[in-house]
Length: 176
Image (cartoon, rainbow, N blue to C red; front, side, top):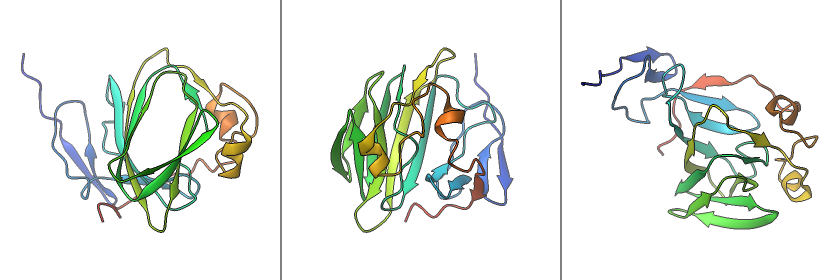
């Protein structure tokens, strides 16, 4: 059985897959999304995402978290491509630099925060599952980095209640 090539749709912010299928796309040409609180990330997946895993590059400026401190029922992996970040993991801080890899087994509490004196780019990969569960615990350490949920919850809407949900499509500023 042959797998069809996905068509790529051109937007003002760049290209993304318009449908499922295989494709080749340069990240510099792809569509990105930006949030004032959470940085900038690739948005090249088809409308319903990839079936089995999520993958993208997230760019963070110093002090900017990529989300809220959380744990989830699936594994994730993070590879620092450029710059530095701090990973808050299980109530500890670890500084990561270019080419450092962070493996995150299911239910590991974690979040990444840009560090150093320039932008940090992180390749992020995570398993997708229909029965995926999330938990956002209280954390003074994550709060120090602006990455703590305002309340302990299992609901993303509650965890991100204090962040804007307005994501802006933008052109790539990375690769640098």
